[in-house]
Image 1 (tube, one colour):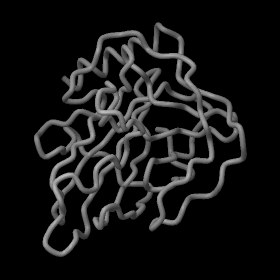
Image 2 (cartoon, rainbow, N blue to C red; image 1 turned 90 degrees about the vertical axis):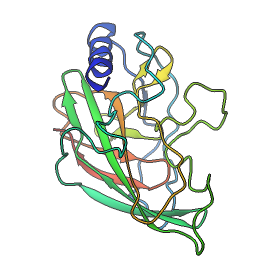
Image 3 (cartoon, one colour; image 1 turned 30 degrees about the vertical axis):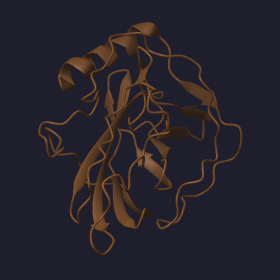
Image 4 (tube, rainbow, N blue to C red; image 1 turned 60 degrees about the vertical axis):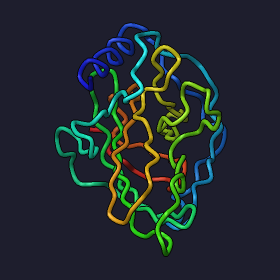
Length: 215
């Protein structure tokens, strides 16, 4: 599933010739403190999509090799870690270097539960850490689409790639969290120009990561 879907997305990016980007409307601030939620400094707008096959509900780019969510191949060391809390649950989020895949680039991150409330977390607590969609009937609900790649030199914000109207991002699971639980998330973007070696990554909950390598 991972290989098939990723190939479809890469083909769409290669031949469709479009990417979801917008101009950078304001200077980008430094990374947010790890204990505070991110405050977006950009307001990107819709500017295109990738019209290929619809991804399954199990995930798209970054789908995992096992139920535990571990990627099929280990990523390199993380470039940074941010900490945030929601509904009394404390999470660490590790971000890894972006990986070029032809005309696409893949973002990979790892979420780890560090603390839960006394007596345990409620069933739906700590959900929607990465998604920007709150409507349950929206096809992008639950997808980890709350990432933005900011090319500050080119004044461009890259939004997640879109496959037949659905963001090419993994599905954000909402289990009952326990200390030590790990969730891998990923999202596919049209690749920035080859001259761009680093970008800022803005997240939905965990602030911004500066100078993230694009490999």
